[in-house]
Amino acid sequence: MIYLNGDFMPLEEARIPVLDRGFIFGDGVYEVIPVYSRKPFRLAEHLLRLRHSLDGIRLPNPHSDDEWTSLVEQIIARNESDDQYLYLHITRGVAKRDHAFPKDVLPTVFIMSNPLLAPPKELLTTGVAAITTGDNRWLRCDIKAISLLPNVLLRQMAIDAGAVETVLLRDGFMTEGAASNIFVVRNETLLAPPKNNLMLPGITYDVVLELAAAHNIAYQVRAVSEYEVRTAQELLLTSSTKEIMPITHLDGKPVGDGKPGSMFALLYQLYQNYKITIMRGGASIS
Ligand SMILES: Cc1ncc(COP(=O)(O)O)c(C=O)c1O
Image 1 (tube, rainbow, N blue to C red):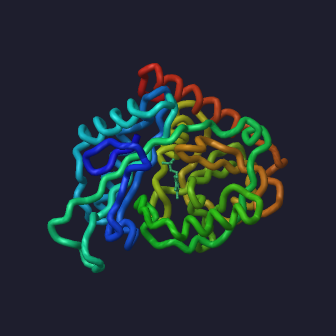
Image 2: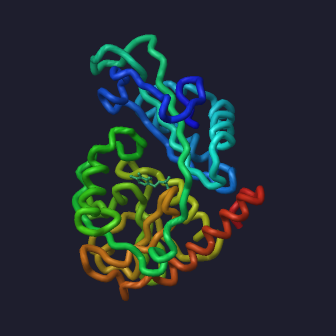
Protein backbone atom coordinates (compact mmCIF):
# COMPACT_ATOMS: atom_id res chain seq x y z
CA MET A 1 0.00 0.00 0.00
CA ILE A 2 1.11 3.54 -0.73
CA TYR A 3 0.01 6.95 0.55
CA LEU A 4 -0.95 9.70 -1.89
CA ASN A 5 -2.39 13.09 -0.90
CA GLY A 6 -4.45 11.90 2.04
CA ASP A 7 -5.38 8.37 0.92
CA PHE A 8 -3.87 4.91 1.27
CA MET A 9 -4.22 2.69 -1.81
CA PRO A 10 -2.48 -0.07 -3.76
CA LEU A 11 0.42 1.25 -5.87
CA GLU A 12 -1.37 0.21 -9.07
CA GLU A 13 -4.25 2.56 -8.29
CA ALA A 14 -2.12 5.65 -7.66
CA ARG A 15 -2.48 8.38 -10.32
CA ILE A 16 -0.70 11.72 -10.74
CA PRO A 17 -1.84 14.46 -13.14
CA VAL A 18 0.68 14.99 -15.98
CA LEU A 19 0.97 18.66 -15.00
CA ASP A 20 2.43 17.75 -11.61
CA ARG A 21 5.56 19.90 -11.28
CA GLY A 22 7.48 16.83 -10.19
CA PHE A 23 6.80 15.31 -13.60
CA ILE A 24 7.25 18.57 -15.58
CA PHE A 25 10.24 20.15 -13.77
CA GLY A 26 11.53 17.63 -11.25
CA ASP A 27 10.36 20.31 -8.79
CA GLY A 28 10.35 18.44 -5.51
CA VAL A 29 12.38 16.70 -2.81
CA TYR A 30 12.46 13.25 -1.26
CA GLU A 31 13.70 11.14 1.62
CA VAL A 32 14.56 7.47 1.98
CA ILE A 33 14.11 6.01 5.47
CA PRO A 34 15.13 2.47 6.39
CA VAL A 35 12.86 0.49 8.70
CA TYR A 36 14.20 -2.42 10.76
CA SER A 37 11.80 -4.76 12.55
CA ARG A 38 9.04 -2.23 11.81
CA LYS A 39 10.93 0.59 13.54
CA PRO A 40 11.99 3.59 11.41
CA PHE A 41 15.73 4.17 11.72
CA ARG A 42 16.73 7.70 12.75
CA LEU A 43 13.33 9.13 11.85
CA ALA A 44 13.93 12.48 13.58
CA GLU A 45 17.14 12.98 11.59
CA HIS A 46 15.44 12.08 8.30
CA LEU A 47 12.58 14.49 9.02
CA LEU A 48 15.10 17.23 9.85
CA ARG A 49 16.89 16.64 6.54
CA LEU A 50 13.52 16.67 4.75
CA ARG A 51 12.83 20.06 6.34
CA HIS A 52 16.24 21.31 5.13
CA SER A 53 15.49 20.10 1.59
CA LEU A 54 12.03 21.71 1.59
CA ASP A 55 13.51 24.98 2.89
CA GLY A 56 16.15 24.72 0.16
CA ILE A 57 13.49 24.73 -2.56
CA ARG A 58 11.21 27.18 -0.68
CA LEU A 59 8.35 24.71 -0.36
CA PRO A 60 6.46 24.94 2.95
CA ASN A 61 6.52 21.65 4.84
CA PRO A 62 3.06 20.13 4.25
CA HIS A 63 3.16 18.24 7.58
CA SER A 64 4.38 18.65 11.12
CA ASP A 65 6.86 16.05 12.40
CA ASP A 66 4.02 14.43 14.36
CA GLU A 67 1.94 14.11 11.19
CA TRP A 68 4.89 12.69 9.26
CA THR A 69 5.52 10.24 12.09
CA SER A 70 1.91 9.11 12.01
CA LEU A 71 1.98 8.66 8.20
CA VAL A 72 5.24 6.72 8.45
CA GLU A 73 3.77 4.46 11.15
CA GLN A 74 0.66 3.82 9.08
CA ILE A 75 2.65 2.96 5.94
CA ILE A 76 4.87 0.57 7.90
CA ALA A 77 1.80 -1.14 9.39
CA ARG A 78 0.13 -1.51 5.97
CA ASN A 79 3.11 -3.21 4.35
CA GLU A 80 4.23 -6.78 4.83
CA SER A 81 7.97 -6.79 5.39
CA ASP A 82 9.45 -6.22 8.82
CA ASP A 83 12.41 -4.51 7.16
CA GLN A 84 11.32 -1.86 4.70
CA TYR A 85 12.63 1.28 3.08
CA LEU A 86 10.24 4.17 2.87
CA TYR A 87 10.32 6.66 0.03
CA LEU A 88 8.78 10.08 0.85
CA HIS A 89 8.28 12.41 -2.11
CA ILE A 90 6.90 15.96 -2.09
CA THR A 91 6.42 18.11 -5.19
CA ARG A 92 5.22 21.68 -5.66
CA GLY A 93 1.90 20.30 -6.91
CA VAL A 94 -0.15 20.50 -10.09
CA ALA A 95 -0.27 23.75 -12.08
CA LYS A 96 -0.19 25.13 -15.64
CA ARG A 97 3.37 24.81 -16.90
CA ASP A 98 5.29 27.90 -15.86
CA HIS A 99 8.68 27.96 -14.18
CA ALA A 100 7.63 30.49 -11.53
CA PHE A 101 6.02 29.08 -8.37
CA PRO A 102 2.24 28.65 -8.70
CA LYS A 103 -0.03 30.40 -6.18
CA ASP A 104 -2.49 28.55 -3.93
CA VAL A 105 -1.47 25.06 -5.08
CA LEU A 106 -1.30 22.13 -2.70
CA PRO A 107 1.91 20.08 -2.77
CA THR A 108 1.76 16.46 -3.89
CA VAL A 109 2.72 14.06 -1.08
CA PHE A 110 3.58 10.47 -1.93
CA ILE A 111 4.94 7.72 0.35
CA MET A 112 5.75 4.18 -0.68
CA SER A 113 7.40 1.23 0.99
CA ASN A 114 9.55 -1.53 -0.44
CA PRO A 115 11.11 -4.53 1.29
CA LEU A 116 14.61 -3.73 2.54
CA LEU A 117 17.05 -6.50 1.73
CA ALA A 118 20.44 -6.54 3.40
CA PRO A 119 23.33 -6.34 0.90
CA PRO A 120 24.33 -9.86 -0.21
CA LYS A 121 26.93 -11.36 2.15
CA GLU A 122 29.27 -12.14 -0.75
CA LEU A 123 29.53 -8.42 -1.60
CA LEU A 124 30.60 -7.77 1.96
CA THR A 125 33.30 -10.42 1.80
CA THR A 126 34.64 -9.53 -1.67
CA GLY A 127 33.82 -5.83 -1.67
CA VAL A 128 32.53 -3.92 -4.66
CA ALA A 129 34.09 -2.07 -7.56
CA ALA A 130 33.75 1.66 -8.14
CA ILE A 131 34.92 4.09 -10.80
CA THR A 132 35.78 7.78 -10.53
CA THR A 133 34.65 10.71 -12.61
CA GLY A 134 34.19 14.47 -12.39
CA ASP A 135 31.27 15.71 -10.31
CA ASN A 136 29.16 17.61 -12.84
CA ARG A 137 26.12 18.20 -10.61
CA TRP A 138 24.77 21.54 -9.42
CA LEU A 139 26.05 23.39 -6.34
CA ARG A 140 23.17 22.45 -4.01
CA CYS A 141 23.88 18.74 -3.60
CA ASP A 142 22.86 19.14 0.07
CA ILE A 143 19.22 19.28 -1.11
CA LYS A 144 17.74 15.81 -1.65
CA ALA A 145 16.08 16.90 -4.89
CA ILE A 146 14.01 14.52 -7.01
CA SER A 147 15.71 15.95 -10.14
CA LEU A 148 18.34 13.21 -10.18
CA LEU A 149 19.36 13.15 -13.84
CA PRO A 150 23.09 13.75 -13.17
CA ASN A 151 23.07 11.06 -10.45
CA VAL A 152 21.26 8.66 -12.79
CA LEU A 153 23.86 9.20 -15.54
CA LEU A 154 26.77 8.99 -13.10
CA ARG A 155 25.50 5.75 -11.52
CA GLN A 156 24.90 4.25 -14.97
CA MET A 157 28.55 4.98 -15.86
CA ALA A 158 29.50 2.65 -13.01
CA ILE A 159 27.08 -0.06 -14.13
CA ASP A 160 28.36 0.16 -17.72
CA ALA A 161 31.90 -0.33 -16.36
CA GLY A 162 30.84 -3.41 -14.36
CA ALA A 163 31.05 -1.46 -11.08
CA VAL A 164 28.42 -0.50 -8.50
CA GLU A 165 29.23 3.11 -7.68
CA THR A 166 30.83 6.23 -9.12
CA VAL A 167 33.07 8.21 -6.78
CA LEU A 168 32.80 11.90 -7.64
CA LEU A 169 35.72 14.33 -7.77
CA ARG A 170 35.44 18.10 -7.89
CA ASP A 171 38.43 20.46 -8.18
CA GLY A 172 40.84 17.76 -7.00
CA PHE A 173 38.75 16.68 -4.01
CA MET A 174 36.24 13.91 -3.39
CA THR A 175 32.63 14.90 -2.81
CA GLU A 176 30.59 11.67 -2.51
CA GLY A 177 29.21 8.80 -4.57
CA ALA A 178 26.40 9.04 -7.15
CA ALA A 179 24.01 7.70 -4.47
CA SER A 180 26.17 7.27 -1.37
CA ASN A 181 28.73 8.98 0.87
CA ILE A 182 32.34 7.84 0.66
CA PHE A 183 34.87 7.41 3.46
CA VAL A 184 38.61 6.98 2.97
CA VAL A 185 40.94 5.12 5.34
CA ARG A 186 44.61 6.15 5.52
CA ASN A 187 47.11 5.46 8.31
CA GLU A 188 44.35 3.61 10.23
CA THR A 189 42.38 6.88 10.27
CA LEU A 190 38.89 7.32 8.88
CA LEU A 191 38.63 10.41 6.66
CA ALA A 192 35.29 12.01 5.82
CA PRO A 193 34.72 15.07 3.68
CA PRO A 194 32.98 17.86 5.62
CA LYS A 195 29.28 18.40 5.03
CA ASN A 196 28.72 21.33 2.73
CA ASN A 197 26.72 22.27 -0.36
CA LEU A 198 28.67 19.79 -2.51
CA MET A 199 27.33 16.62 -0.89
CA LEU A 200 24.21 15.16 0.66
CA PRO A 201 24.48 15.11 4.46
CA GLY A 202 24.04 11.37 4.80
CA ILE A 203 22.21 9.96 7.79
CA THR A 204 24.39 6.84 7.59
CA TYR A 205 27.46 9.11 7.33
CA ASP A 206 26.47 10.66 10.69
CA VAL A 207 25.96 7.25 12.28
CA VAL A 208 29.41 6.10 11.12
CA LEU A 209 31.11 9.19 12.55
CA GLU A 210 29.20 8.86 15.84
CA LEU A 211 30.23 5.20 16.07
CA ALA A 212 33.85 6.14 15.36
CA ALA A 213 33.77 8.79 18.11
CA ALA A 214 32.12 6.46 20.62
CA HIS A 215 34.58 3.63 19.99
CA ASN A 216 37.85 5.59 19.90
CA ILE A 217 38.37 5.04 16.20
CA ALA A 218 40.68 7.74 14.84
CA TYR A 219 38.82 9.93 12.37
CA GLN A 220 39.10 13.31 10.71
CA VAL A 221 36.42 15.35 9.00
CA ARG A 222 38.29 17.33 6.36
CA ALA A 223 38.65 17.76 2.62
CA VAL A 224 39.94 14.53 1.04
CA SER A 225 42.05 14.89 -2.09
CA GLU A 226 41.88 12.77 -5.23
CA TYR A 227 45.41 11.56 -4.46
CA GLU A 228 44.29 10.36 -1.02
CA VAL A 229 41.38 8.50 -2.59
CA ARG A 230 43.62 6.82 -5.17
CA THR A 231 46.19 5.72 -2.58
CA ALA A 232 43.74 4.79 0.18
CA GLN A 233 44.16 1.78 2.46
CA GLU A 234 40.39 1.31 2.38
CA LEU A 235 37.37 2.96 0.79
CA LEU A 236 33.87 2.62 2.25
CA LEU A 237 30.52 3.64 0.87
CA THR A 238 27.50 4.34 3.04
CA SER A 239 23.80 4.80 2.39
CA SER A 240 20.52 4.04 4.11
CA THR A 241 19.79 1.03 1.91
CA LYS A 242 23.37 -0.27 1.45
CA GLU A 243 24.48 0.52 5.02
CA ILE A 244 28.30 0.20 4.92
CA MET A 245 30.07 -1.51 2.03
CA PRO A 246 33.76 -1.93 1.21
CA ILE A 247 34.98 -0.62 -2.15
CA THR A 248 37.84 -2.94 -3.02
CA HIS A 249 38.56 -1.85 -6.59
CA LEU A 250 38.71 1.67 -7.95
CA ASP A 251 39.02 2.31 -11.68
CA GLY A 252 40.04 -1.34 -12.09
CA LYS A 253 42.88 -1.17 -9.53
CA PRO A 254 42.83 -2.80 -6.09
CA VAL A 255 42.21 -0.54 -3.10
CA GLY A 256 44.92 -1.49 -0.56
CA ASP A 257 45.29 -5.24 -0.88
CA GLY A 258 42.00 -5.48 -2.81
CA LYS A 259 40.13 -7.05 0.13
CA PRO A 260 37.73 -5.53 2.67
CA GLY A 261 39.89 -4.10 5.44
CA SER A 262 39.82 -4.04 9.23
CA MET A 263 38.17 -0.59 9.43
CA PHE A 264 35.29 -1.90 7.34
CA ALA A 265 34.96 -5.04 9.47
CA LEU A 266 34.89 -2.99 12.68
CA LEU A 267 32.43 -0.33 11.49
CA TYR A 268 30.17 -2.92 9.88
CA GLN A 269 29.93 -4.82 13.16
CA LEU A 270 29.36 -1.66 15.20
CA TYR A 271 26.62 -0.61 12.77
CA GLN A 272 24.88 -3.99 13.04
CA ASN A 273 25.08 -3.82 16.85
CA TYR A 274 23.67 -0.29 16.80
CA LYS A 275 20.74 -1.45 14.63
CA ILE A 276 19.98 -4.17 17.17
CA THR A 277 20.05 -1.59 20.00
CA ILE A 278 17.59 0.58 18.07
CA MET A 279 15.30 -2.37 17.38
CA ARG A 280 15.22 -3.12 21.10
CA GLY A 281 14.11 0.43 21.76
CA GLY A 282 17.47 2.04 22.61
CA ALA A 283 18.53 5.21 20.85
CA SER A 284 21.92 6.54 21.84
CA ILE A 285 25.26 5.44 20.50
CA SER A 286 27.58 4.19 23.21
C1 LIG B 1 23.91 11.50 -3.51
C2 LIG B 1 23.77 10.76 -2.22
N1 LIG B 1 24.71 10.92 -1.27
C3 LIG B 1 24.63 10.27 -0.09
C4 LIG B 1 23.60 9.37 0.17
C5 LIG B 1 23.55 8.63 1.50
O1 LIG B 1 22.62 9.22 2.37
P1 LIG B 1 21.90 8.35 3.50
O2 LIG B 1 22.96 7.73 4.32
O3 LIG B 1 21.10 9.35 4.26
O4 LIG B 1 21.06 7.34 2.78
C6 LIG B 1 22.59 9.19 -0.77
C7 LIG B 1 21.48 8.28 -0.46
O5 LIG B 1 20.95 7.59 -1.24
C8 LIG B 1 22.67 9.89 -2.00
O6 LIG B 1 21.74 9.73 -2.94
